[in-house]
Image (cartoon, rainbow, N blue to C red; front, side, top):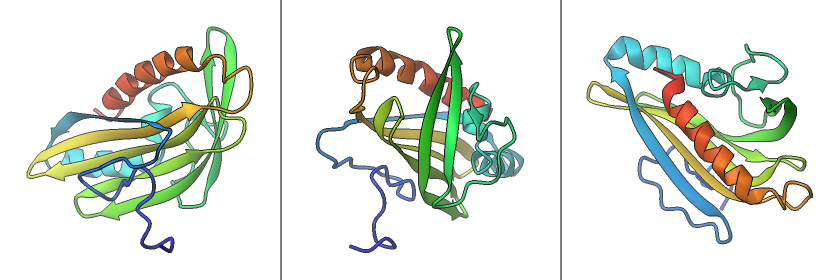
Length: 168
């Protein structure tokens, strides 16, 4: 299967996701973020400007106003947690920009606290606008992150709740 046919692990272009990557924990959460064309336009623009991350307390590329998401782009996402700065190197593997579905997915790179892929999507169905967050996660190979994996799963749940509110 070539790159054009590969939907990516988290398949951001697909409305219905059936995770099939052995050894990874799948997760999908979603929430309504509003209704109407104006809400759709704002959310569709924001998702491709990393706003789901920056409005959730992360910096992307060292700034709260990063460039538009493009496939192949590498970024370092940073978070400050309990006075400690955590860096998360990632690479964008898919970008979706369709009339009713916009978003992207990234894979983690070496040095990220976990291994896997995460997708951030906004979609509309009729007048409703929803955000969808998908992830496939496993422990990173390096220490100390590998030993901290159970704590990182809790932090990931907290971050997902923030993502669901970020584009409202």
